[in-house]
Image 1 (cartoon, helix red, strand yellow):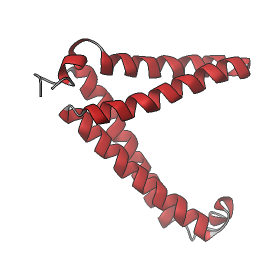
Image 2 (image 1 turned 45 degrees about the vertical axis):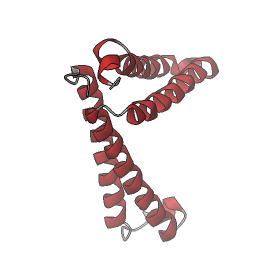
Image 3 (image 1 turned 60 degrees about the vertical axis):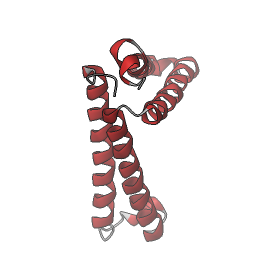
Amino acid sequence: MAGTRPGGVTFIAVLVWIQGALDILAGILLLLGQNVAGAADSFGGRGGLVTTAILYILIGVIIILVARGLLRGSRGARLVVTVVEVITLAGAVFLLIASPPQALSAIVTGAVALVVILLLWTGRAATFFRH
């Protein structure tokens, strides 16, 4: 590692970790709620619900691993987060053009994606990931 981890990187990693934990929790809750009347129907049946729950859990685990990589200065983790944020930014621009009533949401989403990208690729973060 090339020095101390910048606060911006820590902040992003914590947010990413929380997202992963929430995905795992959502998957577990889906599994626990599969016997609730009507729950499986909205997923096309019990198989769809279980599949969705397992995918949530797997994605959550992957997200937590990415967050761990960010905390350790992994360039691969930074690249994964950057790709996701670029896709989010492109989606926000598309939403801004395609649905003007959603402009505020698109602007906020795009701004957050842009801030994340800047925090990961500029200043002390650039040095931190260059090890």
